[in-house]
Structures are given as C-alpha cells and as structure tokens.
Image 1 (cartoon, rainbow, N blue to C red):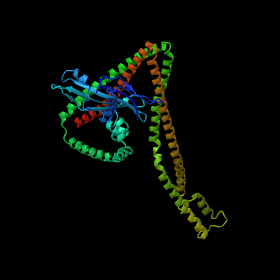
Image 2: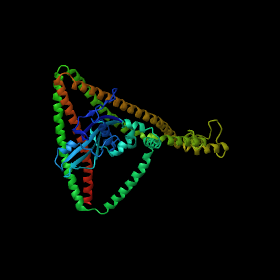
Image 3: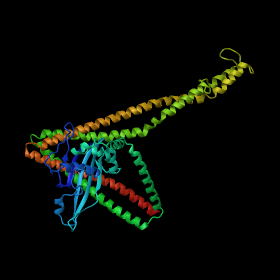
Image 4: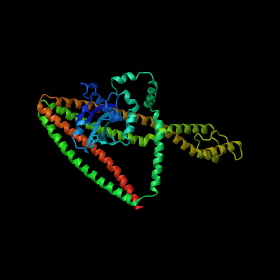
Length: 471
C-alpha cells in the first residue's frame, strides 16, 4: 500500500477544501509535516485513520467534533455543512480513491447534529478509467490493511511505548493471525450465513409480487437511467472542451523559451504512458485467452499418467498386439506355409498356433489407435510446459510494463514540479492552469466510470422488472 495524496474539507480545524497534500514517492519517499502545537499535525494523522476506519488516536481531543466550527457558524441553522476526507493510494498496481463524508447541521439550540458517514471508493482499470469496485470498500480495505493492524502503521509518539508494554502479546498474536489471513475463514462462514438468509428472504418475496410497486420502481429506474445517460453526454462534451483547453495551454508552453524543452519531454512521456496502458490491456487479454483455451492442460498430468500405466499393463499382459497384421497371418494360412518354411497343414499343431495369433491380430486397429493416442498424450505434457512458460512470459511483460509506468509517472511528476516552480511567472501560471484542467479531467473520468457502472446495474434491474411484468 503506497499513500499518494490526502485532501480534507471542513475536517476539524481545516476550514473549507484544502489543497491536495501530495505525499513523497520514488527515491525521495519521506514526507515531513511540521508545525506549531495546534497547527493540525494530529488532525492530519487522524484524517488517515478516520477515512480508512473511522478511528481516532488517543491524542485527539474531542473526537466527536468532526466538522469545522467556523463552517458551521457561517451558515443558518438547519443548513447542512459537508465534511469529508479523500485519500488516494496504490496497492498491487491498482490506484484507489477513498472518500468518507458526513454532514453537520446546527439546530436552534446551537447544537451540531451529524448525519451517518458514508464511504465511497473508485479504482482505476488498465485503460485509465475509474470504476466503483465490485466488492464493498470495507472488505477491500480489510484485505489490504486490516483494521486491527492499522495501529502499527498510523500512530503518534505516545503509541510507540504501548506496543511493548506487558499484556500486549495476546493482541500482537491476534493481529498477526489477521495479517496471515487465518481470521478470514471465520468471517467467510459468517458471510455465508448472512447470504443464505438473504436468499431465503428473496425467495419468499418472489412468490408474492406487487405489480403496482414493481411498475413504480421500474419508472423510477428508467428516469434515473435517462438522467445518467444525459449526464454522460454532458461529461463527454466537457472532456472534449477541457482537452482542447489543455492543448492550447500546452502549445503556449511549447512557444515559451525555457519551458519548451520540458514540455516536449512531457508530451513524449505522456505518449509513452498511453502506449503502456494500451499494452497492459492487450497483454491481459492475451493471458485471459490463453487461460480460456489452454488451462485445461493443468488437469491432464494425473489422467495421462494413469493412461500410460494402463497401456503398459495391457502390453505386458499381451492384451495388445505388437503390430502383426491380420492380412499377413491370413496369407500364411492361405498358402499353408510359414515364413520359416514349415508346412501349415489343416489340423497340425503349427496351423493351430498360427490361427491363435489371428485372434490377437484382430485387435490391431485398437493397438494403432492406442499408439496414436499415446503420441497425443505425450504431446500434451509439452503443451503444459509451453502453457506455463507463456503465462510466465506474459506476466513478466505485464510486471515490466507496470514498473515502466511507475517510472514514467515519477518523471512526469518531476517535470510538473519544475514547471510549477519555474522562475518565469507566466510559465508557472500556465502550468498551474494545466494541472487544474488535468485534475478536472480526472474527476470527470471518475464520474463517467461510476455513472457507467450504475447504468449497467440499472439496465439489468429494468430488464428484470420488465420480465416480471410480462409474466
């Protein structure tokens, strides 16, 4: 898990929406935050624990007071004030955006009433778009960094001493079991029980549908689907406009001496990054196709081994011939002479022996089929080796692409930093405008991905409701 950035809005002493706090990465991967007492250092620490787990450190005074006091005072009683913390982090080559928010309202008695907090998560795909995860955000966080372990990663100075006090061994043991994934088995059993109960309730509901209620739900879904479709069109249009604005500003940088070389290098790196994203999508599709077409070879070794043992046993017991043709033996009986020169008279012992071989020769076709099958079975062993080699090769390419992508992102960040801090005020202004546009583009792409996911869910629900109505 690599923390990327943190942003707050009306959280504790931070009034309004703060700038994005970008955390160091790469070789210079240490971020130092310093300030006087009361400046907000402890609040920043607790912003991490709150957005991840709604937990606070012991050093935080009045943890129940979440929303900034000034923001509450400035609005009329009954007006809701938004409070949120947004964290972006990376884990196993996936980029996550996590946002927890709540609302506070001042009543007539000048007391602040809080709404329940909500947690939202988006994840980037290899094509660069943001999508809501299929799993719940809480389950994903629990898998990446279990809640019971967060105290070992987010702590203040006073907490260090408590790690080694007497009586903590049991907690450490339990937390280690959590890290190793042992506890997930217990949780899985509980989830299965809940899933069983949910399915039973759904089955009972299906038996007594309320048509009017279903129609009303369908109409609401269709209206919401239309609204999202219209919003998707607006986002597409807005993205085109922003890309044009960004390109105009980029061209201005290219025309300015001092910034043109940096901007040219940036454009080159951006094109390389796009190519890598395209390659990642293609290479993952290659692995998917490879698995769908050849993964069956994984299950063959046991079967092929048994088959070869069976053939060996049949040959040892002479239940399969060694290739003597039926036509050859019939020709010997017809000419009444063996290849050794002995006469094969009707009723003689030699004649009887040759006729005995005729019965075995009748199974020659079976032997030929067994030989052909044996050759194919041995080829399958090589196919298994080739399959794993191909998977390893493709996965190595994917890992290499991810490393190259991280390197490019770091280089692009360094160029942006140089342009943002350039001595020329005009270059600084243009760069800040470009970054603002890029941030807006990212937000719109995230919204676009979330809307698309919601549309797909709604369309499935609408189809289901229509089927119920038609029945």
